Length: 305
Image (cartoon, rainbow, N blue to C red; front, side):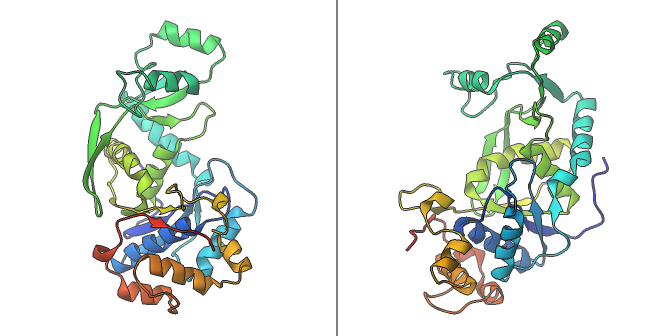
């Protein structure tokens, strides 16, 4: 399968979706991804995951915020929306290996099926897996456009995470192409990481359960599985994942309150135990002090002032 952009060295990455401004939790994860990459002599790449909702101007503001922190990346910024040929090639290969099937389930049908007592939590129950050709024809005649799912041959898969150790998660018949024709996230991220030479994935630990599915898919495609590090999230005062609705949590919000980008980086550095409150910092200083062993393992609770 030819999905490589070029011969590339190992790399880490930050891959935001341009659906709005980055909040402090997103920026903190970007800083961590940069530190993990640079401290292991990897390149650092930025990829814009724009297959779904795109808010005008969001990408430009996101990149500007990263630059304001002093976070420098290598090579051009890659956009998923311009790489659909690679995703189609991957799906074609799985299809030729007999590892795909059409799924006509609605979201409501899937929710009802996966909430049944016998269904593994979060796993697609295989409703359309063994439809006959006559049944598929009937579904098509009803006007339902099918999604394309993976015909998984494993139920569980184990990955190794630098922070969490060995983690075994469910591998179900995940969606490869949605019924609107767009490639699904789990497929696109696997193909892109391999194509860009990304062999280190640092992201929020809310995505830990996705890693076994993605690693298994990479295995089926004959692609390398990256090194994972799922880092603690930023939470609000209620213990829920930090979001823009929680107040002054974006770079623009903090600047409006009188902070500078250096102050924002300082706040992130304190949360990582890499600086004292009020201490001037830079990305290079954080890199000089970086030791992943000392990374806090608990979520960071941020309460906007």
